[in-house]
Length: 116
Image (cartoon, rainbow, N blue to C red; front, side, top):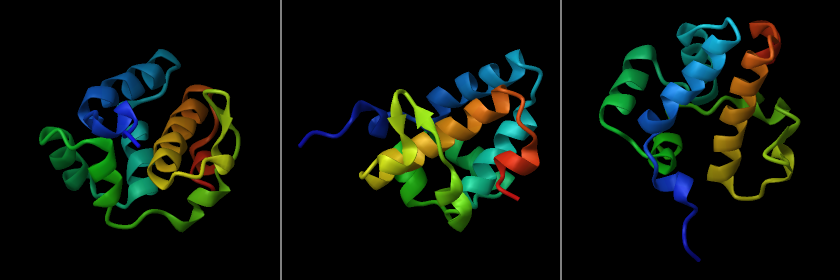
């Protein structure tokens, strides 16, 4: 079975799109970074290093220091697929991130986005 194209894409190539999506709705790059850090456990410095070295999505999530145990509370649909129904672990992590950025762009409060 061939890997989905997103797995081999660098997080750095998609990251500006996350930031642009958030900023168009009056949110900030700092909030996007906070979401990514919450989901993955990377520090701001580690996140910057991952972006700088063009880490692909598969390695980005495989090397994540501490995937947040509360991420299973992320519900909803991304690209027509319910995130909780995605069986492939890496794809589910990518879709969790997509869903969190969507929630940010829709104006949801950070406390709710971060499942506090």
